[in-house]
Image (cartoon, rainbow, N blue to C red; front, side, top):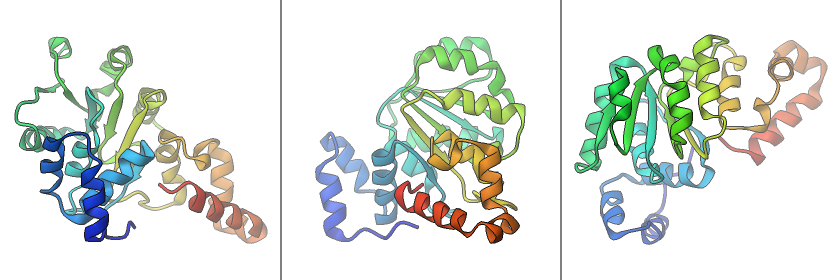
Length: 221
């Protein structure tokens, strides 16, 4: 959990944003949201796991200054993302991807849902997006075609933001694909991660717990 920014820290971040327009937009955010924006911009590939209602969507929109941006989310959230983006950037074109012709439109923001992502992976790779946001990122927690497609999509993208209020639903292994997506050191090999997060195995090998804690400290999410 990120510490709440002091007034001085908030002011310092505001002074370093690129334009006066961005500074004015950032002033509308709460301190914890400004902290989240700074966190995402600094890490470039990161998991934002604030609880529901704390404004993860808005934080990601403000952090995503390298455009165009591709947003992958559940189908039920597509229009919400469109509204949130237009609230921050009323003059930006936002395209919800449904049919092939949608991909031919010029826009700063493209939104696609997980269920049809397979139709758009090659298109997205050809677009060379500098920023991709995976909302409700626990959708990629399991070994599935959908997860493979999402991981393939983001592997070469400079800025990858994963948003989820529930990073671990049942078992630590459910974090693996998210760690892999952000290129965290613990996301390199699934079998190794599974062994090191298994409670029985950790009791037999206490040095693994020390390794996990060191990785968490050196490479925060």
